[in-house]
Each structure stands twice: as C-alpha cells, then as structure tokens.
Image (cartoon, rainbow, N blue to C red; front, top):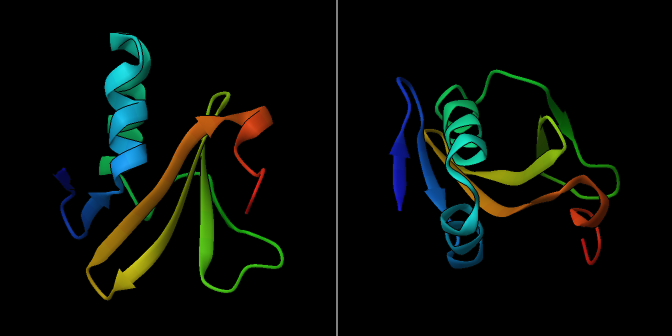
Length: 87
C-alpha cells in the first residue's frame, strides 16, 4: 500500500498495513493524515537505531525509515506501550 504525500511516497510493510486496516475509521483517518504530512510532524530519531524514526500521533506510534531520497518505509504502527518492543 502506498500513500503519496506531496513530496514523499510512503510504503507500508505488510504488518503496518494490516494494523492500519484493523483500526476504527476515526483513528485510521488520523494516522493516514499524519502519514501524508511526513516528514513533517512530531518526528524524532529512535535512540540506538541508526536511520529509524518515530512519528507520534496521539497514543499511536509509527516507526519508519527513509528507503531512499523520496520514499519513507513504514515498519510498524502500534499503540504507544508496545511500539518499541523488539526494536
């Protein structure tokens, strides 16, 4: 699944797409709106992980990296408490 922002393409991993599809419509809409604005938003680099970042949208975290100069690869979409386990 690709979500095209104005300047960046956003590619979701299989697990991220599955999580997004399972969410209720209002939460899904908020996350999609946040993804479309990437790389803007509440973005911070992940500590101890070279090249990985997180986007905060309410209680949800989106973990991503830059695949190349115009593509963002979404690795995980998870609630705040479980987003960083196994990273």
